Image 1: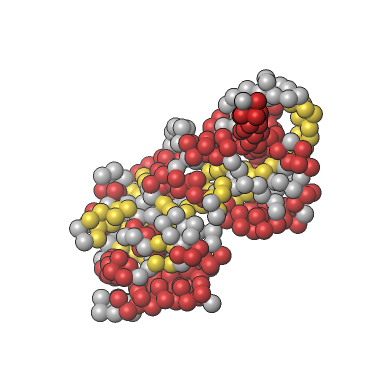
Image 2: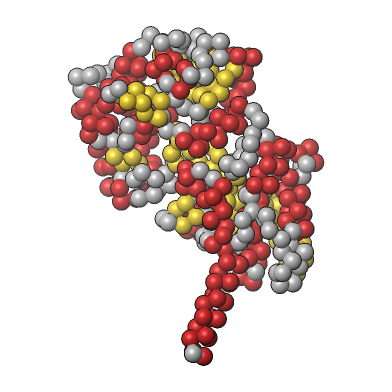
Length: 409
């Protein structure tokens, strides 16, 4: 019996330690029962998040985190590092890098190789999965692990003229083409995949996480899309590009970076929505834009992580948690990924909707580079008219073989 009880106590102690290292659910719970410690935490983020003009978002959130953990005496040291520079600045010498930092999700494989990013677990991952769409969670997942707390998405959607298209019209690309001119960058491989994926084509499996699966742009499902795109390109109400290259276009596809262009084009009639569905063989198929994210990471190479990983993980969870994302949206209009947050503008809603149901993760696999060229070539050939219904099957299979031949080599 004594041996049995000792095993139970040991198991409970192990569970307790794992829960601590797993972090909290975004800083929503207090820390009054935590062990008293005195630590220095280095945090990196972009300059915009630390400026007075934007309410010093990073400092404000770190101070709020400290207030929720009264038994932890924390000294914060701040550094400037944009999300896009994290891979370089952390990878140079992870042990000298920040304990917690912000990064773009496509850097995960490189950060793992340099030992500058920790796999998260426990309650932190549970909360990430509970508060974000499956696509968003997949943007920070790699080889079965979760490596960051996402706080904003990166994808594209649709801008349109509300005087031409109704909210019902914009649910279907085919319905839109009956009423006005629509522009789409068909010769851009970051966009064209949305049609093929809509009809069941995959890049490294359904979730983009299976390197061995390669690219599946083969068979009838892919040929059907190629035939659809041939007809789309021939439609007099379709134009390749966007409203900048096609001023007559009453709808075009881009991301937050082109909001001003859309506003200049459509003014008070500007509407914004997730990508529409297309109709193939009489069935509606949801277009799927490539998606990524920006997230908060924990650096396992620092002294803080070696001594008190629970502090670093809890801070990352807090900075990517609901309250911090709400503040990010309020101060800088950083569109949240947290589905608990109610946004009050069409731009934010369109991006959140796209991340929720109108996108797939742009795969992080090393062989993803073998997709871009063949996909771009297909788009350009469709636009030029060299891909026809007579050779659609042949051209489609050649695209698929080219992607996968490059992956094998």
